[in-house]
Structures are given as C-alpha cells and as structure tokens.
Length: 140
Image (tube, rainbow, N blue to C red; front, side, top):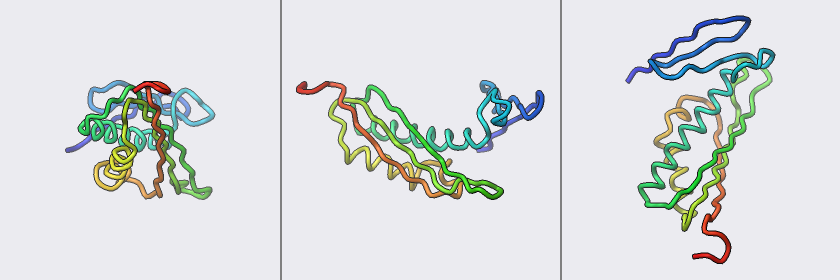
C-alpha cells in the first residue's frame, strides 16, 4: 500500500498538507503558530495509531467503552536531527467492567505487532493506562 501526500507552501514556514483526497491540515513552525509542527504530527500519529489498535482490540474483547482519551508526551534530542528519544503514552479508558489485563494486552499488541507508526520511528515508547468506570461508585 502506498500513501501519497502533498504539501503546498503558503507563506513563511506554513504548508497546507493533504493525503490523497483527504481533509487538509496546516503545518507550521512554533513561531508561525497556525498549525501543528511536523514533530507534533508524528507524536499524534503514534498516539492515534495505538489508540485505533487498542479500541479495535478491546471492542473484539467486547469491552463496554464509553470514552477513550490518549495523552502523549515526546522528548526530543537537543542536537539535530532532534529526533524523539522517548515517547510516553497514557490511555484513559472509560467504560463498564473493562479488565486491566485486556487493556494491558491490547497496548502490548499495538506496541509490538500492529502499530506501524511506532515501527516507523526510532524511539523508546512507554505507555500507561487508567480505567474510569462509567457506572459510578457502588453501581454494578
């Protein structure tokens, strides 16, 4: 499978990007501030890739999910090419009766087998998770 993207320069260091006929995104540098930086997109891509894997796996396990939030942080080297040296990902899973062992396994499978974004970068990726029981305290 080939992914095709196109960037069109607009001004300064701002670009409008598209992949195939998908929606447009804005790339910019921190000074311009009109869009995410390329490295922010990389970090979001890693988190998004894992999020899709984890949700898909948990749905196959018949987990009753009501919300999933993925928080990510990436540390970059100080010297060029300023690559990610560590990425930390936290999954906040909200649902009823979600099993920690299922979440751990879903994250592990994404990290080691399914997430092509992780496989495409040379970074140490760590992750944690939280489960929020949406049935509330004392409700079963």
